[in-house]
Image 1: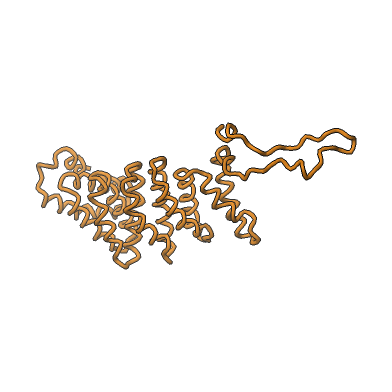
Image 2 (image 1 turned 90 degrees about the horizontal axis):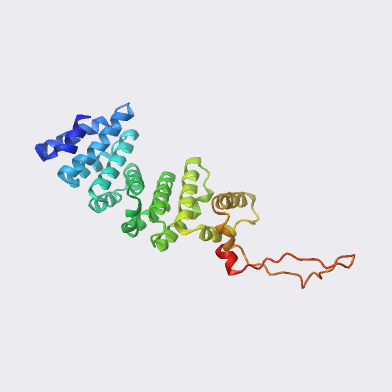
Length: 282
């Protein structure tokens, strides 16, 4: 893509006005059937934003979230995320979050998707922005629209994986409280996103925090509730069976209740479930 090369290597030889004209032309490229063309187009937005600053480019892209064509909107959200990554997220985040206030489903879903891609791209830089986006994600995870909750969970997943081990556990725990009620969703896309978020939070918060949430439902009277909770527990067990030992309840040796002799008079050795600190550490 020649624009991509020029924007990367010789952006200063073209006026800002001309770059903006190219931006509008590039929006048409997002409709292309070939994935390679769409990919080059979204990358070019990043280079143009680097050349002339993110504000004008961002304004063009945010306007494009209003269109009906889904492919256009998805490509636009990727372009916004690339602009955020190229020009540092703080230049983009205020305008993107402000756009969420528009009471229209497509725009709000586009904003959430852009945030999801952005956190996927920026990784551990997310620690500087998690407290800023938390209220927005709260709103998305409580929304009546399923797609809001699905995209919100996807964002939480990338956010949790990005800030793992960076001391943002308070915000992650807060978001977990909003993600958790969605584990009973029926729609396959939503439930996949919810479980992805829970798995991301397993990494960000540690498995024992999730175990504390799971314990309450493992033996619930309703089968449908038990099934969901066991599904989460099985995931925990597959990924973190060793770390879960710390979270299990401490069971004392019950030999006082069961006298330790068998019928033939030999002493019976009981299982002793008390764990030493060393065992927990190991």
